[in-house]
Image (cartoon, rainbow over all chains, first blue to last red; front, side):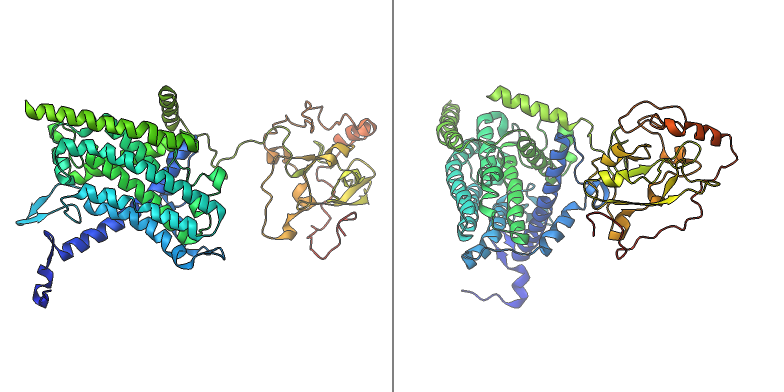
Length: 350
Length: 211
């Protein structure tokens, strides 16, 4: 182990980046995600309201824009009611884990293309990883621990039932989601997310992989526990599922986790299928808009569709959920890989 | 299945762009329906005389005993109501009232009806007791103060049509009296001399089950 001399501390690199650049990017991303999650709750309530011909929150600040702040204050000041028979350590850790697991994936998502600033390669992802997609698949599965540990440690039947359903659901859909992403890997010949985006310069992968995109999006709905796959929470059946016994800011962290997860999942879908930060391929003039705005716009669109779906479709029955995962989505995913692989192989040989 | 989902999604998308039907209360108010049973109103005849004759039938009909009436003899020279007596004090405990409207049904002179007001919450218990000053129609411009009556001016609780001014269909016995007074000199209602009664919690007010 080499000891870094104090003078070189600022010049110390982790991977291709200076350590302080990584720190700044990480702080920005975490703050951004927290804000985005907070305003997603606001957007969700507004979308729900307008679909139901209501107005939605409009009392705190102009058109209710400060509502998330009011909600946060409320959650922070609420009493933390905790069940007596809980596993203290796990009960405490689980909510934080839910939020953390959702944030992890963002470490490798390129918000915009690499730029050269004063001869320095500025990457728009925190960790410039060449196996980013693999990392994402590994890390997003961690979310199930937060849910299962939270449900189990609370020592309540509703929590446990919600946690059991959730683990079964997440594990079932994990596979389908991974298969759905495989098509994009085959097309771009890379696990590096930035290269995957760059491979979409001419055609976004949605057009080449419509089935893959659909499967990923459905799987993402299931993985974020959103309707029509919200069986882990299932208010009408399980009170609130795995977080029944949580209150105050501990519940707030689960809530935050769920909404950050929405952002994350939409960001992954954007990167792999909607061309990431790239503008619309047909219109050249749109290049002046910075990449991160394109990226945010696409993510916002996908999040909106999630909300739109939530306020339209009812919850699936549990056996149908399982059937859909194993008997429909998984075979379709395999079919997608087979066809994509065959086409790519044929093209390469000719 | 896919067609149905697409249909549903299209429907919710269309809903998204429709005008919300929310009424932004309290900034926006909707006129109360014709037979709305809100806070009571003590009515006057069109010449300003109070309809209430202090008979206490409303109090007797009230299933929760929330009405307190203290009758007094009318001064023949300066009467408050066309009958022998009038209500010197008339109070309704709105915390107790169930807005059933039995008082209005029991009233022989249609002096009391349930009105459109419904925002009755308060921070102090004392103020939830409506006094006669609160309940009585203003004079002289009570019609203006009442605003447009959705039932039609003077129409009764059941939404029946307005009747001839100053004449109640149930009040044949005092019709002559009314007509005689209408040509008379009196313009100010006769209860002006009574000091406004400020209710207090300690004061026994309700004669029935409210002890």
